[in-house]
Length: 309
Length: 261
Ligand SMILES: Cc1cc2nc3c(=O)[nH]c(=O)nc-3n(C[C@H](O)[C@H](O)[C@H](O)COP(=O)(O)OP(=O)(O)OC[C@H]3O[C@@H](n4cnc5c(N)ncnc54)[C@H](O)[C@@H]3O)c2cc1C
Ligand SMILES: Cc1cc2nc3c(=O)[nH]c(=O)nc-3n(C[C@H](O)[C@H](O)[C@H](O)COP(=O)(O)O)c2cc1C
Ligand code: FES
Image 1 (cartoon, rainbow over the protein chains, first blue to last red):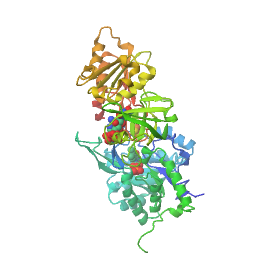
Image 2: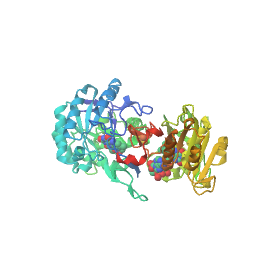
Image 3: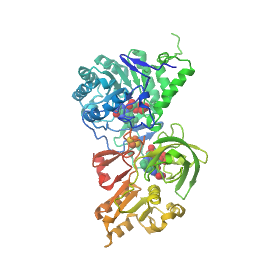
């Protein structure tokens, strides 16, 4: 038997396989394909304080080995989530990481406080500090780096929950952002969110998605995500990392683990293969068995360098 | 909902524009309602990346048929498959057309590749009249495909090469204008190009005829997790892959008003 148990600070996960926010619904949408209890954790679609209608259509567009999206954080708001979704995860004992975003620091604080009240049913919070698709005041301003620290501090003051700060290369110097996030009170980071891209319909000459640009995700994003996870883990091995960016097969997941990822989040792959998480989980397990790896810890951060040290 | 690797039984051209592909699957064929669809991965690997949505066209026992046209790369690749090739198919997805239409008579209005799911509907539950609009006679459904209710079909072609010249809404309007037409007695079910369906809805609302339309939106997941396939309804953006693709006329305001949200 391979030991896939993954410890992150005080948290303990059955295995390192989780899902990327916004690609797995808010409840049990994929129950026909996925045994939710087998997952290391479930990360929800971003929840905001108030309901958000989301962007006009078109919101998605296929690109080479990936897609662009500009959903605009459509969600039913915190109240609905707390009322209708949290009980489901608690009842079924599914480790839940709640992804939140606010239009202001105050929003973030209020959400953190409300969720802290339910902390027995929640494993951790993931702060979406990097959604490329929302132009409304506060969320957009998060792109300015100093706001990251301010937001995290505000959240930290209001909850004892474990905090992951979800960052994107769009913020500029990722290493610096990670440092700042940790200094401000984040316990870990999620790397990476989508990177903005564009596609144009040459006949209508319109952008292929309404918002003009959208976040690139899927296999096309993977090498970039892997690089960031690796660089951050090299510089700060003690900082827990949830990796996302094109993880589609078990081989991809193993790659990220070798680069040092603590959890591997399956995102866009769920759209193409609804069983992706299950396939990845069993693939990783079989790989470890074949390679005689007894514990996932042996794999994590085990990159072999060409250079002699 | 199932996701299965199926084997292509047959894939051939049925007229100048449409292809028909068939495969067998117990799970994908059971409990399907006309208007529901499948998500097809036209080939392995990440190019093209996403699955493609296609409506069920016909089910005979465990044999499933899809009627499709070549629009871009995905459907082109689909058309290249031959007997024995493997294909990843997920379904049945979405909510189909209403079976119960408040005791009214069924009027079907289809255009382009919106016709196949309506043929499925007509074969299963019958119809009073079936209006089919196409660009030219080259795209008209082969008679062999609509034999069962051919006598009730009214054809229009934009170039006049088959049936009545003009848009499919032409003859519909002529009929609605007749003195003895009773709007309460009929229910429209439509599927086809957006412009066509909007025109149908306009006329329907003008004459007071109820109905429902099947909308075609771009999709990624097909199962309600990406939120990429929204249709604007009176209660906000609504997921067309799970709540649709069929929506009641009165649920959806005119499309030109959507983008302003
Ligand atoms: C519920 C539903 C049922 C459908 N049923 C049928 C059917 O029975 N027969 C048939 O021929 N076609 C049907 N379509 C349309 C079919 O999905 C598109 O023709 C197909 O996706 C085109 O893919 P492509 O790679 O050839 O085109 P490309 O233009 O290369 O596709 C690029 C991207 O845009 C999407 N896309 C392009 N056109 C459409 C479209 N019209 N609707 C939705 N997405 C589109 C593709 O899925 C893909 O993600 C249906 C669509 C929906 C939403
Ligand atoms: C359709 C879609 C919606 C997403 N929504 C969110 C979201 O609400 N919050 C968030 O933090 N990330 C969101 N993401 C980003 C993913 O969680 C993930 O970080 C990113 O897509 C990269 O991983 P992937 O390539 O495996 O999808 C979304 C991605 C996609 C494709
Ligand atoms: S296609 Fe993903 S939500 Fe409908």
